[in-house]
Length: 209
Length: 94
Image (cartoon, rainbow over all chains, first blue to last red; front, side, top):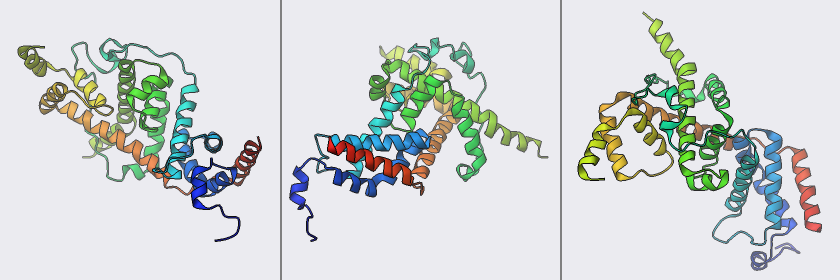
């Protein structure tokens, strides 16, 4: 044991120190950065969120519990920071109806007697479709065309894994409204992909003799 | 709901209702009566079965891109690392 190393026992009872934090930065900084980057997209923002996470960890009065590892503890702080970031993003108010049938988008996708306006076609995707760069260009374009309030709710749900209950608190919306928003987001995204990717493949096949 | 009304509901489920439940099933467990009604509808409705498949695809695609990004070799830039260290030290001195 080198001189000056803090015995393990003491480290567990003492609050996290800056020296721990810089070691954490070495050990976990890149993992946290990747986690944030994959969920918020922009590099600068991801870096800021990682910094906020370490600062919060240092200031935390409750050091991580022994049953969790430093990594999962830090990730849980980061996840909270990402949720807060999304929550603070102001978006135009969305239709707050909590019944899909009464929402204006209903008529876009369904007839008044509940049938599909445009019946979903089979998606014949090659197994490696996710490996294709062009697919992701279309996918991300479709995501970016979602109305902002829907995009926010959808990303929190799908990328950050926030459950409906937590979404309700985070976004201060009713559970019904959140369900309607998630459903509309999926309907939009599905229709956009069908129109711009799967539909096109279908079209090509149709033109074959 | 009495038994007759339940059976009627099962037989009468519309595509818009089925689609809504399929979406909701991605987020929450459904009540047994909803599951039953949905399953019966899906047995008879090919477009809604496609929709279910496509919702699964959407979920899988999102998961794929997240795990791909997490397994990447992206690293914090040297600048970001220094900035974070500096701010940590300052926070520690307070």
